[in-house]
Amino acid sequence: MKTLFIAARSDPEAMAAMFRAELPGHDVVTKAPGDRPVHYAVVGKPLPGTLSSLTGLELVLSLNAGIEHLLASGEVPEGVPIVRMVDPGLVEGMVEWVAAQLLAWHRNLFVYRDQQAAGEWRQHGELMARERVVTVLGAGALGGPVATMLAALGFQVRTWSRSGRAVAGTATFGGDDLAAAVAGADALINLLPATAATTDIIDAALLARLAPGALLVNAGRGAAVVDGDVLAALDAGQLSAAVLDVFRTEPLPADHPFWAHPRVLVSPHVAAPTHARTAVAVMADSVRRHERGEPVPHVVDRSLGY
Image 1: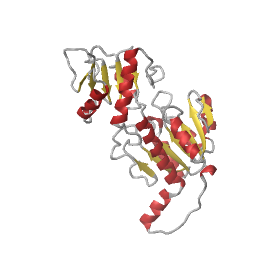
Image 2: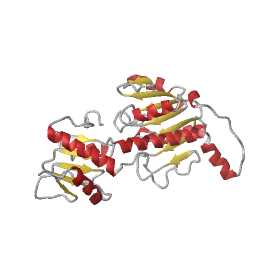
Image 3: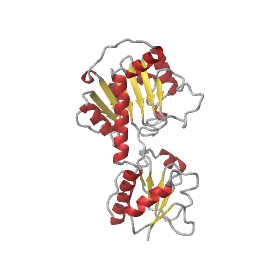
Image 4: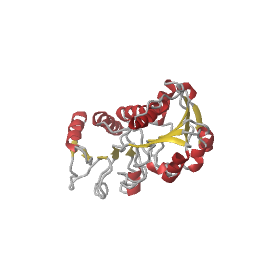
């Protein structure tokens, strides 16, 4: 009987019950059994030493889409696959969250919120979605569905990714075409993973290529954004608003200027939460595929960092 260890910090017993229903022939535990091998580890952001203390690992199953913390820790042995979280609940959550932010900005709800605080009754002109250009950075498991949804709403959507992966209904850019992908865009949506290549990718030069008064939405990783450049673009009017869900340091420090800026909306890393039921079903399927000798989806390429 193989052992599956749940190292989640939030209600691991509830998750264990779901795994036992999915994998009845496995020993599912929430405390590491120090005297015997652990074949599968389910982890979010484990405490230091959690993974390095395990023997017999065959798969590490991440509860998060982002896995940079697992790579940075160095605790996952070379040759042990890391499977990042891509499940229907997470994807649906991201699609909904991005749509909510973009549509609120597009229909001037941010402006009317501020007017309400001032007791001001004043209408503003509206554009149709088809008159807006939206660039989505990332065309993979999250960026692809988000771009598809925005195109279905009528926006002119461009996608950019390292590989130039095509997304139906969008204009595709890749590699060295980043500047062209964002040129004149009314909104920039970042869903890129955290890698050396994406660190500081959204800087003053890139923001200057957007249409004046553009919207920035970051639900990828905080390190992609140069915080000071975003604040400067907001103050100069190059950005009219920034909706930020991820940050270099989390929780966002109390003295960070994002908290007090009138045109920044901060949310506490909630754009795409992991839903236990759908996540467990996906991870259990990965275990079954592994045991049948079949390819496991969404295995991390360590050379790329995602």
